[in-house]
Structure formats: structure tokens, C-alpha cells
Image (cartoon, rainbow over all chains, first blue to last red; front, side, top):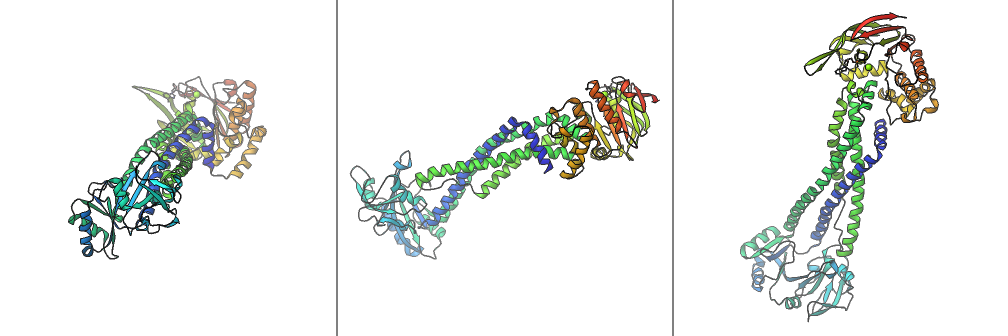
Length: 379
Length: 223
Ligand SMILES: Nc1ncnc2c1ncn2[C@@H]1O[C@H](COP(=O)(O)OP(=O)(O)O)[C@@H](O)[C@H]1O
Ligand SMILES: [Mg+2]
């Protein structure tokens, strides 16, 4: 408590310098929190997504990358091949689908169409899907629209949705918000979408399994027996995404590390200058009877205090920034993409404190080792 | 008690060795002892050794029944805290603390709680005629006032020995006289005051005067 008063007095005695140092660390911490909050948000969104997903295996053409919509490159005979293998592998149902993405620069002008065969509807993707208005099945010739998409493009019941120059579909159903990617999808009949794309092929097979079949094993067998496909179970996809996300985290942490190092140097500079200016003061303290540890603790506490104050403000600023980002992404895609989780808060505070410690140790050591006579001699 | 035996201090400067103090032996009696000598005669060096700020090249110092050379830095700091008080020429006070907090500082180091610290520090400031200045920072005080705060602080733990190195050096004669009176007033009974000065008039106020010249004790004058 007493030490804190001394620390506070000294930092406020050099108010401008302390303030800038504090701001520097706050900005560094905030940028780190913000950068890493994306990873946390995506992770949450993904977990929710996977938890909601129906099919246990997705089959796409080999070479399709995981983050873009699959092109229609699976020929009809592949569907027959899978159906033939179905009894042997414990496949309950195969839903062939086509995906069409019409991209724009913002969410309102981007459209993701899913073409589903007769007998299949959005619940085969997301078992919990429910309609807010109309019906859930797009057949025979309608479009079922996710809640976010409906809101962004003012798609109400009966409105015409243009898929190409001469293909139009009326909105026959609007889904309830699900808090996942589902909210941005548009479901249409498979035939219609194939016609728009001018193909008889499929983009993806959604494979549902018997309860006792093992998704990883079935996926592997499918890949062995049907050349030219990628079969991926939901859990595998989750693992893959987690790995990709960890790499993303590392990259983001690397970028924010630059800011953090600058913040650390700021603290070190501030504390070193303050130590140099106060040599005489430390001399007086030692003369009166302060031990070396006292001086060491005093200087280190100053560095830690600066780092802690900067860290706390940084986390708060990062939290606010993250909330602002979510305000936008929630409006745009219906997902909170940024999350300041407790572990992120602890991690950031830990990093800030570690910085303060590293930046403070050397000045503190120097301050505590100045010989008394030398310290008293310098005015 | 304060006793020095065969105290010498050499400074190495490159190839050359400077002898700042040679074979100083003296047992300081209670009361005020002035140390005089021209500039560079070794006065500050002597005080540094007596107070344990520095280690002698040879010889020994006994302060409050403790041989300082047997102690490390922190051990000597502990002895200073309990048994010695200091008033330097200038720049004595901790600039970010108020007068009262400066006087309380040794008590804080000694682990005394806040309310008791204030209870003990305030009467000391009163004795120095500074009760009204308790909440002032050093830069709001005159030089004489600062020195009086320093004396109050030096007395906070009722030390056996007071060390003062040119305490009036930066003061006008009126303020200097006041500071000197206060120092001498508190060098009574068993308490000792070691008063380093180059001013013979000031030295004459002590009970005895030690004359240093070129690092040697050349004369002991009882007054
Ligand atoms: N740290 C030091 N290094 C080298 N020489 C020193 C040092 N301190 C003092 N001296 C020398 O020792 C002698 C005595 O100095 P000092 O004790 O400061 O004298 P005084 O206080 O009487 O003026 C002087 O010649 C001075 O230059
Ligand atoms: Mg001197």
C-alpha cells in the first residue's frame, strides 16, 4: 500500500511522460485483444455452426478448397456409385446439392444459393431450422430464404428472386434466425439451380449415416473407392478449421507482438529515464536506511503499474472495439465474429504484466545497485 | 557509540592512487564534534566511512556497538536506519513527498503504521517550527525550511548519531544560524553530532573540533 503511494506520486510527478507511456501500452494491448478476438469469435461461430449441422460427411470434388463454395464437378454417375456403396458402408441417405455464390462487395449484394433435390429441405443442413413465414420446402419452384438475407435484401413472402436473366423464383418461405451461416443462405430446387449453371453435375453430396457407422471410416472408404473426391466428416472439418484458426491466431499474435514490443520499449524508456533522474533521490533513501530491495521493488512496481494500467485500459478498449465490430458483422451476416473471452482477457493481462516485468527488471536492478556515495554525489 | 580505528581510504584513478584519508583514529564522545579542513582534505570521505556509505580501504568503524565492516550493504543500511540520522548540504528531501511524509519516511522503512507515523512525525515538524508546512512539497519550501525538515527526518527514529555535511552551506546567515541551533540542540545527552564544515565560525559552536589536512587528522581542539 505504502509503496503504491510512492509509485503513484512519482508517476504523476512526470504526468505527460507517464500518460504517453500508458497510452502506448493501452494501444498495444487493445490491438492485440482486437486481433485475437477475431480468432475467438470465429471459433465460437464455427463450433455453433458444426453443432447445428446435419450431414455427417460432405463429399466434394478433389482439390476444392475448404473456404470457397464447391463448383459443380461431381458427375451424376458418382451419385450412383455412392448409392451402390450405401448399404455396405452404413449410409442412410445421400443428398446431392449444388451451390452457387454470387459475390458482391458487401453482404447485401452477396448471394449463396443452395440447390436441394426433391425430398430434401433446409432441415437436412441444420436440423433445427424453422420457418418464420411460409413453408420450409422450396419445391416445386420457390426460394426459402435465411433470416439475415431476408432482412438485408427485404425479401418478403411472394417477392421475386432473380437467379439469372431468365430464371426467377418467388420467395415461399423465410427462416427463423438461427445465429449461424444458415441465416445467410437461400435454398432453391436443385433442378432450377442446375439449369442456371447449365450443368447436370453436382457440387456437393451431403451424406447421412446410420447411427452406428463411424464417420471418419466411411469418409476414408469413400475416398478409396471413388477416385476424384474429397470426403470429409464434420469432426474432421472441425479439426481442420481449428488448425487453420490456430495458424491465424499465431499470425495475428505475431502482428500484435510488434505493437507489444514497442509498448515494452516505451515502459523501459520511461522507467530508465525516471531512474536516471532520481539517482540522487535513491541515494537519499539508501542513506536514510532503505535496503536495495526497497529501491528495486519501487522501480519495478512503477513499471508493473504502468503496464497494468495500460493493459487494463487496452483490454477495455479492445472490448469496446470488438463490440463495435460485432455490431457490424451481426448486421451484415448475423454472426458475432469477434469475442473477448475470459481466457483472452487473462492472456492479454499476462502479456502486459510480463512486458512490465521485463521492461522494469533492468532499470530496477540498476537503480538498486548505484553505490550510495555516487548516488549522493550526483545532483 | 561511534569509533574509528586506523581508517584509510584510497581511490584508484587509472594508474594513480589517490589517498583521501590516512590512518584516522578517533572515539567520538557524546555531544557535537566538528570536522574542519580545506576543500579536498577528506571530510566527506570520513563521513561516508563513518556512516557506512562506503567501505574503508583499511581500518574499522564501530557505530552503535556494531562493526560496520562485518556487514553488507543492506546490513549497514539497517544500522543507519536505526542509529544514524543525516542532513546533507542540499537536495535532502524526496521531492514527490510532502514535508510530513518526508519526516515519516524513516518510520515507513522501519515498518511503522501510517497513523502512528503521522503521530510521531508531526510533533517533530512542530519542534522545527514547521507545523503549518506539513503538507507542502519541498519545492514549496525555502532552503532553510527544507533543512529543518531534513533535521526533523533525521531525528524521526531518535538516532544515537547525527551526521551533517555542510548543512548550512547553501543557506543565508539567518537561516543557517537557525539550522545550526536546531542541530546543536539535538546533540545533547548521549547523542552525538558529527558536523562537517569548512567554516571555522560554525565549527566553534561545537564542543570539539577535529582538523583534517590532506586526509590526516592533524589537530584535536577541545572548546
Ligand atoms: N570517488 C572518488 N574518486 C576519486 N577521488 C575521490 C573520490 N572522492 C573523493 N576523492 C578525492 O579525495 C579527496 C578528499 O575528498 P573529500 O572527502 O570529498 O574532501 P572534502 O569533503 O574535504 O572536500 C579529494 O582529493 C578528492 O578529489
Ligand atoms: Mg565535502
